[in-house]
Amino acid sequence: MKAKKPVSSNKSLQHKAEKKVLEDIIAKKNDELNAAFKELAYQHEEKEKRAAELIISNIEHVIQSEEKVKRAEELILANIELAFQNEEKSKRSAELIIANIELAFQNEEKKKRAAELVIAKIELAFQNKEKGNRAAELVIANIELAYQIKEKKKRASELIIVNEEHAIENIEKDKKATELKAINTELEQFAYRASHDLQQPLRTVSNYLGMFEERYLNNLDSDAQKYLTSVKGVTKRMSELIKSLLSFSQVGQSKVLSYVNLKKLLDEVTGDLSFLIKKSKTVIEIGQMPSLNIYEAEIRQLFQNLITNAIKFQRKDTEPHIKISAKKLKGKTKFLVEDNGIGIEEKYFSKIFDIFSRLHGNSDYEGSGIGLANCKKIIELHKGEIWIESVPGKGSCFYFTIPNL
Ligand code: ADP
Image (tube, rainbow, N blue to C red):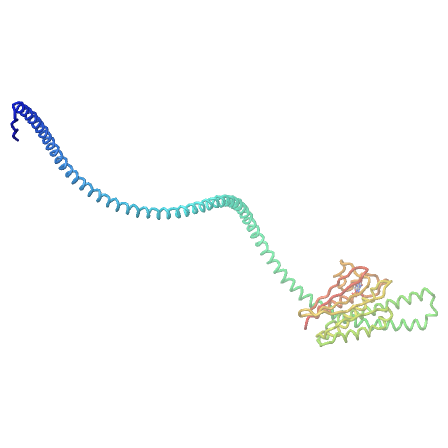
């Protein structure tokens, strides 16, 4: 730019000065502008550098951002996975909780079981001890058993010997029994013959005694009369004995069974004994009676013996009361003949059925001691049994059974 020339010198000088100042200012300003430009250029450069750096850093940032996005994506994925894993974990933990609860329950059960096992162990120990005791006892028992077996074997061999001896004895007994039977038959025949044959001479003695009494009684002194009465009594008793013996030896001789109404038979027996029954004021009750196959004459004799005895063996202050009854049992009939007489002591219960066995003298109660032996023989003939139950001073009950024949 060109400075204008001043109108006067002063003016020109001034103008020049001003121009100089201006130029200086301009130069200064230029310098300043240059400096500012430089500064600006520098700043610009710096800015460009910075921009380039920024670009680079931006690029870096972008890269980083990208990386970060990638990383974020990865993180999201990782998160998703984590979330999934978390879910799995929570599922697993729920399962674990359940499993834990189950384990806790199982543990408790195990504890309980363990406690039970402890008790069971204690019990087992106790049982083992008991078993030990028992085993010891068994050992002792075994020893004892072995000893007993040894003893038994000894006893068995002894028994075998005894048995053999018994067998021999039995053979001997059988032989003896057959012999006895033969002797018995012989004796029965003898008793029959003897009693039968004795009857005749006894009757003759009795007849002569009657005649003697008739003709000479008035010529006899009192002593002779007494002797005569005694001889008559003995003869009568002897005659009765012989009759009883004769009937005893004839038991079962007829060997004919007949079907008999026992009520009817008993009525006949009591009819035959009516004089004795009335005289002794005896009351007889007869229960229901069956009809049976029996040896009639013998059973008639049996009832006659039992009723006569029930009347005969009566207490002084009482009147005879006899009850006769029958009871049907399996395969047989049981009869009862009960009285309210003097009774019999238990020790004589079997003895009274022996022949000639009497518990009283003839002065107390007359008899021959054959009646009950006869009854026994009659019942044995029927394959039955006869026995007595009695209370002395109260009465007796004779029982007998007759099997269905
Ligand atoms: P006996 O009558 O002739 O004496 P038994 O053989 O009939 O003979 O009786 C034997 C004994 O049994 C009798 O002497 C008597 O002592 C006793 N006896 C029999 N029947 C009765 C009875 N019903 N009550 C008490 N004693 C009896």
